[in-house]
Length: 100
Image (cartoon, rainbow, N blue to C red; front, side):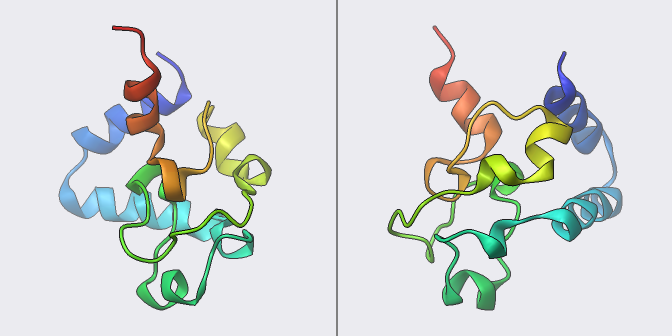
């Protein structure tokens, strides 16, 4: 089990309140607001940590570049993918790319 899987396991085993705290801790270091694709809509709705929460549902609709690889969460959680705001969170992308 890699770092991301360990974090997700701990996340889902935590209480709802603890999950909120875990997510808030990741939001603090999130670099999404510095990404070229991040826009006013995403800022106003508080969208962050797409790597965990999944793709933007309403705000980010065009590719303006991606800076996910510069985010410390990529290293900390051992993330394999990027462009989370458009392609989906790490869990979704792992599932999609997993050989069946």
